[in-house]
Amino acid sequence: MPKILNVSSKDILHQVKIMCQTPSFLEAIATRKIITDAALEAGIEIKQEELQEAADNLRLANQLLKAEDTLAWLEKYYLSVDDFEELAQTNLVSAKLATHLFGDKVEQFFYENQLNYVGAATYEVILDDEGLALELFYALQEGEISFQEIARQYIQNPEIRRAGGYQGIKRRSDFRPEIAAAVFATNPPQLLQPIITAKGVHLIWVEEIIKPQLDEQLRGKILGDLFTAWLKQQLEQLEIVPQMDVNTNYPKEIIKLKSSQAA
Image 1 (cartoon, one colour):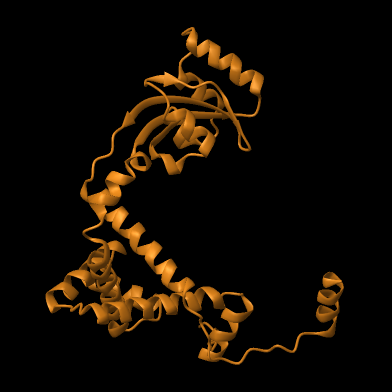
Image 2 (image 1 turned 60 degrees about the vertical axis):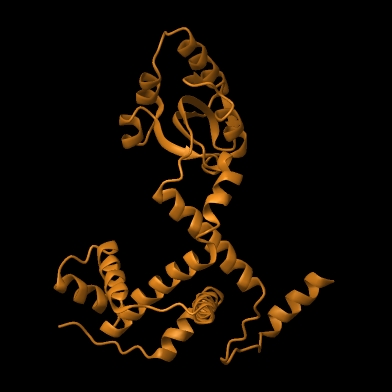
């Protein structure tokens, strides 16, 4: 039979403090209050059927397909059924507030920033030796070897190796700036000359440049990005004052160290 360890709310708060997590917790609390106040000011209302759908979506997102799965999940995170409903409601209010604030601005933002949403399908091998990278580059140009053969020989990660170095479809922001500039200046299919970065020497095959389409997935991403930027702006304008005891009696050794550093 396991031993019982009782942990109080004071113990939990103290652990948060000594793990230096207080600022992130305060920011999360402030964010929730910003959303709640803004939604109230905007007159956003939640219907019961909307809340039920939000709760169902929350269960699906956490793969809680059965009632016992949900109960086990609640127990794991020390949540009540009311807490679960509050979590679903918070998610729903956030989504409705984002739509209220920026739903009619997504299309304009997309067209003004289309270049940021252009995609590229690429294959990549990162080498340690620039001379070897150049040798392989010229061998590829001459058709003496295939990119897949290079990937099988020089990529350590099994999944990427099996995929021949395929990196998926990435947008400009997913690449390092020096690589993005080269990738999106190509006329695919095209092999790039080796590019040196802090990670090594990149040998990249650009298979396709994909023009962006404002589908539901991208619309949701843009809406989320605009909402996140708005929240960040609201937080920057807010002074968070925690109502809690903070020990400022630092040891003399620390004070001396800070004084000597200032000098």
